[in-house]
Image (cartoon, rainbow, N blue to C red; front, side, top):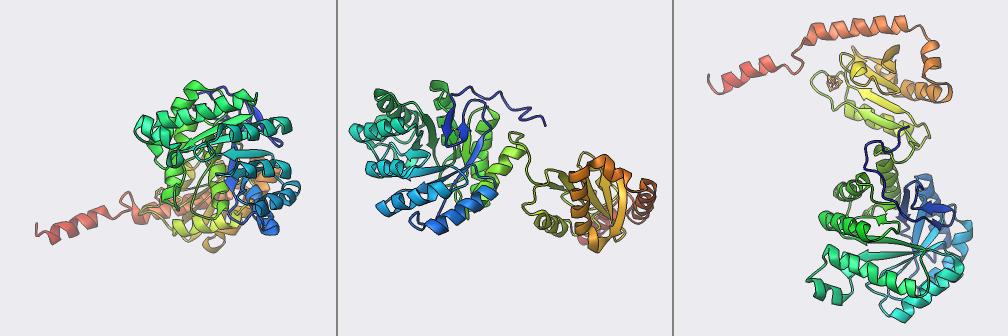
Amino acid sequence: MDVGKWATARRTTRQISVGDVKVGGDAPISVQSMTITKTADVEGTLQQIYALAAAGCDIVRCTCNEIEAAEGLAQIVPRSPVPIIADIHHQYKMALAALEAGVQGLRLNPGNIRRPEHIKAVAAEARDRNVPIRIGVNAGSLDPDLYTKFGGATPEAMVESAQREIAYFQEVDFDLIKISVKASSVPLMVEAYRQLAEVTDYPLHLGVTEAGPPPNGLIKATAGIATLLMEGIGDTIRYSLTADPIEEARAGRQLLEALGLRERKNVDLIACPSCGRAEIDVIDVAKRAMEAFGEREIPLQVAVMGCVVNGPGEAREADIGIAAGNKRGHLFVKGRNVAVVPESEMVEALVEWAEFIHEHGAEAAIARVDVSIAEREAKRDRDALMETQGSDANHSSERIVEIRRTVGN
Ligand code: SF4
C-alpha cells in the first residue's frame, strides 16, 4: 500500500516512547482516546481500555484527579494491553503519584499547573523514570497573563504557553516531550499547530478539544486533524467527542486509514449514493453489510452498488462488490461478475466471498466459479433494466410533463 502518497512529506520530529508505542520520527501515527470511567474503578476502567484497544486505540489516557485514581492506576497499568497516560490538572502531586503508579506517560496542562518549582519537580521525576510528558495547552485554560499579553486565546498565546513549559523542562534536562495546542475552534487550532510546527521539532499530538457530539463533533475534529495531517503535521491524534470513547478510537483509526497513513485493518465499505436506477434500498443494505462485517479484520474494499447497470463498472477498483438487478444480487470481484444470488442473500454472500478472498486472494475466488455464467446473467439483468428504465432512470420526461401541467404551460 502506498502510505500517505499525496500528503505533504511528514515533518521531521524527534521520537519518544510511550511504553512500547513510539511517537514521532518515522513511527506510524498513533490513535489515542480517554476513558470516561472513574479511574478508581479498576475493573470498569480496564474493561473500557480493552474495548478501546480492540477498536484501534494505541494509547489510552485516564484521569488522575485524586489519590484513589492514582491507586487505581497502580493496578490498571500492569494489566492494560496498551500504554497508559495519566491526565493531570491543577495538582502536581497527582502527577508524582501517577509516576509512582507506573504510568507510561503524563499529560500536564500548563494553564493550571503554573508554579515553576512544581513543574520542574514533575519533570525531574519523569526524567529519572524515563517517562514522557505531553504539554497539553488548551485555548480555554491558558495562563491568565497570556490572555492579557495577546488580547485573548490566539495561536501566538498558545505557542508561547508551550514554549514556557518547554523552558522549565529544559532547566531540569527533560526532553521526552510531546505537545498539543488544542482549541474547540478549528481555524484557531489549525493555525496554532502550524505556528508550533515552525518553532519546535518535538512530536505533536493533534486534537480539536470539546468537539461535541457526533456528527458535528466528528466533522469538526476531522476538519482540524485531517487538514494538519495532510500538511505533514502531527504524530499522534485524539478525537474528543461527546460520545462513547470507542467511537473516538474508531474515528481516529478510520481517519488514518482513509488518509493512507495507517494500514487498513477492517473492511473499507464503499457504496453508491443511490439514484433513480437503484434496484434496492442501498442505505439499508450498506448498513446491514457494515454490521455484518463489524470489527472483523478483513482489510478489503467492499462495494455495495444500487444497480447492475453502472455498479460493477463504477466500483471496479473494489476487491469485491455486489450490485442489484432484477431482484437479484450480482457479485463482482475486481470488476468481474462471479456469482448471482437472491436479493435476500446479498449481505451473507458478500461476507462469505470477502472471507474467501481475504484467505485465498481474488484470483482464487474468480477461479472457483465459471464466470461466464455470472457474466451472462448480469448482462441479461442489465439489458432488462435498460429496457425498462432506458437512459431516463429518474423519469425526467414524465416529471417535466407534470411540472408543465402544474404551472399551466
Ligand atoms: S447508477 Fe446505479 S450504481 Fe450509480 S448511483 Fe445509481 S443506483 Fe447507484
